[in-house]
Length: 288
Ligand SMILES: Cc1cc2nc3c(=O)[nH]c(=O)nc-3n(C[C@H](O)[C@H](O)[C@H](O)COP(=O)(O)OP(=O)(O)OC[C@H]3O[C@@H](n4cnc5c(N)ncnc54)[C@H](O)[C@@H]3O)c2cc1C
Image (cartoon, rainbow, N blue to C red):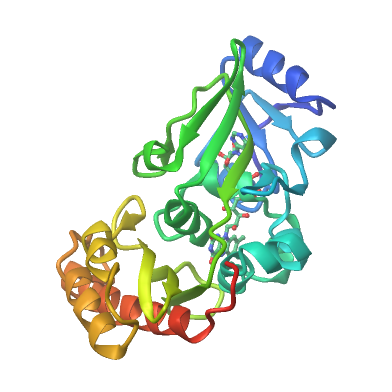
C-alpha cells in the first residue's frame, strides 16, 4: 500500500520544524519512520504535511552531564546500544534495546519516536518510567520540561501539543553499587512485549537502599511498582525478598485483549518482576 499524498518538509533546525508545525495544522513529524511509515502506508494516518527531522543535527546525540545523561530525541536506538556513556551509566538501556524490534528497525528507530508513539508495550517508555526521566519539548513559546510520569495521557497519547517537538530526554544517573534487570515475554523475539519488567537496585552493606521497578505492556502506560519499591528498601536482596515484591506485582491493574487476559498479564508481571530483581542483584557493579 502507498500513503495518501502529502507535502514533504525537511527543516534543518528545531526552530524551523516548530515554525512549520505552527503553520501546518494537519502535519505529522517523521523521525525514524519505523512506526509512522506503516501507519501512513496503511492510511491509519493521512496528514497533509510530513515534517522530517532527519536533517536536524542539534537534537541527536548522547552527552554525559554528570548527574544525568542527556539524550537527543533523534538518537537512533542502535546508537544507544553502542554508546560508552550509556553502557557505563545506564546499562539497562542497551539490555532492553536487544528486545526492541530488529537490527533494521533499531538502525532507523529513535528514542524520541518510541516515546512519542508510546506503544503500551514498548521498552523505552518502560525504562523512562523506571528512571523518572525528564522530557524536553519545544514549541512556539519555547521549551518546557515534562516528568515522564506526566507524559502518557491515555492509550498512545503523550502530553505533547500538536505544535510541539520532543527534543530530548534527561536520564538521571543512579551511581553507587547498583544493578539492573530487564526481562520480557513476547510471542516471538522482536515482537512487542506482552509484559516487560525493569528493575534497578542499589545495595549498601548488604541491604537495599534504593529500588525502582517498572512494568510495561500490562496497562496503557508503564506501571511503577511503588509499593514494592518502598518495601524493598532496608531488605536483604535475596530470593524471599524478591518473591514478596513479585506478589505485589500480581495485584496490578492489567488490561486484557483478544489474545491475552488480564489475569495472564498479572501472572506474567509477578514472574518477570521476580526475575528482573534477581538479575539486578546479580550484577551490582558500582554503576547503573
Ligand atoms: C518490525 C518492527 C518491529 C518493532 N518492534 C518493536 C518492539 O519490539 N518494541 C518497540 O518498542 N518498538 C518496536 N518497533 C517500533 C520501533 O521501535 C520504532 O522505532 C518506534 O516505535 C518509533 O520510532 P521512530 O523513530 O521510527 O518514529 P516514527 O515512526 O518516525 O514516529 C513515530 C511517532 O512519533 C512521532 N514523533 C517522532 N519523533 C517525534 C518528536 N521528536 N517529537 C514529536 N513527535 C515525534 C511521529 O509523528 C509519529 O507519530 C518495531 C517496529 C517495526 C517496524
